[in-house]
Amino acid sequence: MKNLKINATAIIFLMFVLCSLPVYSQEAEQPIIDQKVKSFLKERGRWHDMNVPTSDGQLLYNLILENNYRSVLEIGTSTGHSTIWMAYALSKTGGKLITIEINETRHQQALTNFEEAGVAHLIDARLADAHKMVPELEGPFDFVFSDADKGWYRNYFEAVDPKLKVNGCYTTHNISDRPGGWNSDYLEFLMEQENYKTTVNSKGGGMAISFKKAK
Ligand SMILES: C[S@@+](CC[C@H](N)C(=O)[O-])C[C@H]1O[C@@H](n2cnc3c(N)ncnc32)[C@H](O)[C@@H]1O
Image 1 (cartoon, rainbow, N blue to C red):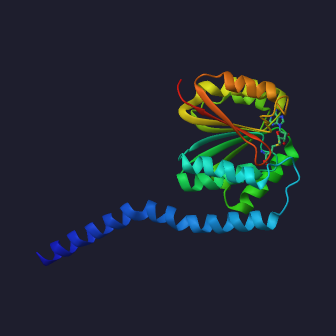
Image 2: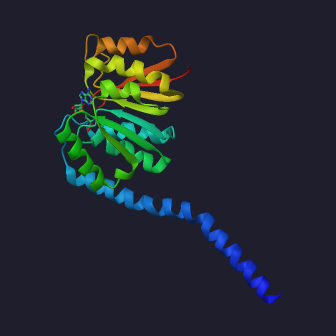
């Protein structure tokens, strides 16, 4: 009888430990990621490969975190500044990210940066031509950051739109809301999309933020 009681207690204890393991490991991992990302970004200093300014990295981070987005696509990795900010947010929401870059040297440097920043496990970095790859991606996505060749911005949007969830968000870099400013034709196109609500954040390099309201 006593043995039976001990066994039952042991089983209950074991079940408790097993059930709390994933939560424990996720919680245990976060301070390590926090520390690695922060010290990597601090030590890295300035970025020189057409990367977003820090304020835009922070903006992408906030959008993902505030909306609890988990499935992210980036078009135009370069050496990975924006990618690291987005992956950092995804370490908190429990999500993953695909990023595409056509230039091999920048792609390789990005891979090194992701390792050093402690976020490589959250990133699927593809060396490819996004013109070809974006239409082939399955999705669905809930957040997109478009920052590759500006002449193709509209084609990227049209290819991803069917794969973006309602309440998802499509962001585009280097957009100005001044008449005749950077990529104003494209901004006009975004504003015409009736199922999207688009605003422009001009604090950094200019970010169009388009929330998808309906299919
Ligand atoms: C402005 S940079 C991206 C900066 C990056 N988002 C960051 O903040 O670190 C644009 C990148 O898009 C890449 N690119 C241009 N055309 C591309 C294409 N067709 N497919 C994939 N990448 C492309 C360029 O090689 C360049 O590295």
